[in-house]
Image (tube, rainbow, N blue to C red; front, side, top):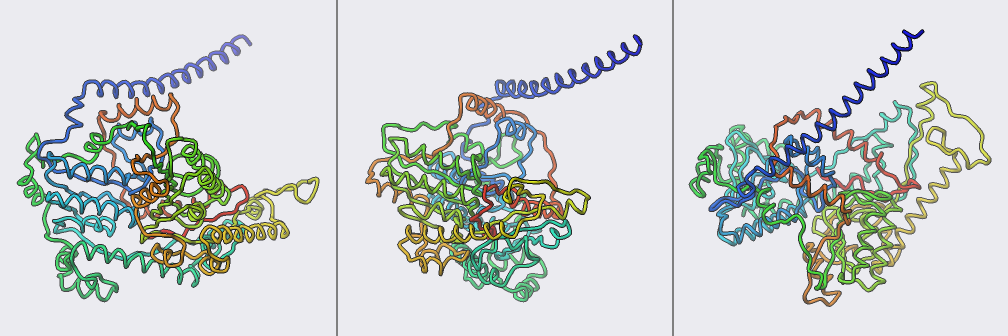
Length: 621
């Protein structure tokens, strides 16, 4: 027995030794990574890495989606990404960073040209592209040339490239402006195969957000509604690009037959097709481009490349990490509401009913803030979360602080709900808005579990007890939920009616879940003006009778600990070396991710009553 006891004791001691060793190894590895980062930060030549090179070209390399607010990333996670040279799954580029860099480069005598490298740009909406394009056009007034270079261009990339003085395409490259569409995934048969019971409650002829769960195709009503705003969106794209390039609208190919005819004339070559159609100025290899740019700004230090200052380097030079705010001057605060509206507290890049309302409250309680601009880029979401934010907008107005809304790419459903009571609403001509409708949705899995041999049973003190996703929904409870959705829709109509000085019937005529583009929304009275964020800021200052003022973005106040780690890792990953990891470009894998992403949208919705004002169809491709 003693031998057996000793053997057991030795086993557990051995296991603990292995676990303890593993624990220490893990934390030691983390410590070493941090330590190496610090050493590199200390020993690196900071001035060399963060210096704007004399007589250089600013290389505007944009990787990711243009956004008005980045999603929050943990500082340590950001450190590891930069240390290993990896990119987040969905990289983002802040529009105001791009504009600030271009505006500074215009005045910077060290910058002799602007080079647009747009291969990594994945989109962001016409309003954001317009904002960057305006900055490019303003840069050109300095008489410094702008070059767009690429092996290929998507329509979003080409929108910016079209504003360059010189647009070059690789002779083996391609350019195809294929218009905008909305082609989503439909899961009705998939859910039936899983024996999932989907319960849908909705109001609005055009409220098609839930169609992917109850149909295998798009309804005719949804097609009619979406075709209208998509056609308007495409028309604005064509007019902007045609004006930038000085070409007629007839250059755009609207049919496959027309494209085929031009393609044959170009010898079946996409690059020649782009050249003959006046989309690009010349076909040039990478070496051709390098030689031309070297002739303009010279070579870099090792004489193996063009003398350029990178976008990220220039941004760090002109954008200090902690900008100071003059507290002695009146201020117009900008609160960003970007992403799906969820209930509760959410990180930056997503709207939380509590967290976004807290930002508005922070502006309300700040004595120096005299007016607020609410910048919205959201398709909506939780009804409760939207209402909590709207209530804080009303509190701002009650405090005598005017609120002006600036609509970005989307301000639909819940995005419009939080905008409606503003003193003035500005939209971009391409803003997707409206979608005034309500739906309720949840799923029960009683049939799925039954198929697996799992059953739910029990007793309750009354008929209301025991509501669960693993039990069938009582018909009476379904009627209650439908009635709640109808009441919410009535509240939505009344809210807009009172805020926009329209009758309920007038609102209902343009509601029913229908989506409108900014130009149509102006005619219908849903917005007051077409304009930019700058226009909204100016209007807010005018409402508050301000002549001399500053603007600043309201952000969550970081704790001392959070601020330390942000600065600590921020300094470390500025200098740490990078290893390259290959990312998959498989079209099949990317499409699979997209399918999962579309289905996952329904999973993240968290309204406590399952009631949503959300425009899932407000997305262009």
